Amino acid sequence: MIKVMNRCFGIFLFCFCLLVGGQEHPGSLPAFAEGERLFAEGSYQLALKAYNSLSSNEGAAEISFWIDYRRLDCEWRSLAGSGRMEAKLSKKIGNALERLLEDFESLDVEVDFLQMQATMHESAGDFWWRTRQRGYWSKAWKHYEKALNLWASSSDVNLARERYLAIVWKATYSSGGSYQFSSAFHGNAIPVKVFENAVKIASASEDKSHANFLLAVALQNRLNQSPYIHERVTRAFEIAISGQTKHDWMENALAQYGNWLASSGNPVKETDGAWGFRPDYPA
Image (cartoon, rainbow, N blue to C red; front, side):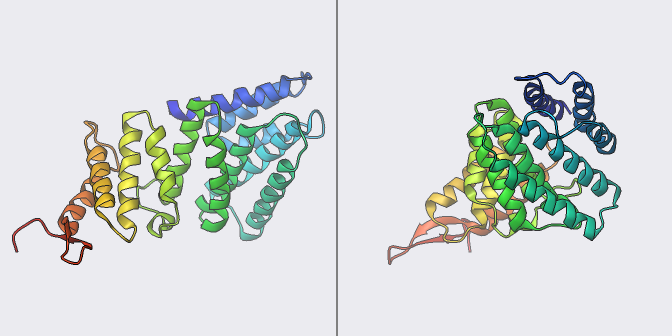
């Protein structure tokens, strides 16, 4: 909960600066702040009402884009949460999100609104990937990848770390709150570099263990194993299970590591110079 509130508070401060920077919006500011607060707590339908009370035709163009984005974001999240997302409406919202992003990225402004752009891409990725009617990885990854790259270049290190890791977790696991690997992860559709970056930027003990677990499995699933990859997989698994705290995904990590040790064996150089793997127990 603390992580969620910190993330939303950081984004709220960014958007607050957008609203008050350069010009005043005394009439719309209270409704905007209320919308951000409701969005942060997951009350998307109420947040939508707050955003709908704002005019998206006043002020700077980037402010209008943010308000329009929040409306779409709240609408699809509210519908998805209530199970009322019909196919026709879903397609309409998805197309609107795509158009909004295209228009925003063609906007000629002096300031680079990186956080705003990354947040919008993450929402579009969530829409195509996390709703029950969607699951379109190719469309989702286009947006997730853009958001990851944007956060990787952000100067706000703490917020960028939080959002980068959140996208990695969402892409890796199926929706529904379980720790079942997604089809994208099983299908090696997420580049190993993403997990390597997650390992590098993770600072909390849980995040470090989690990122190393995913890196180990991602490397394990790749073909063309070598002694170097074997050592990397083993090292990542060891880091993943070394923590004192038992997390929800730890049982899966222990099982995966056990299977890896039982099936992979040790690297052995064959007589022809090639590397193979042999079980390290007596025949």
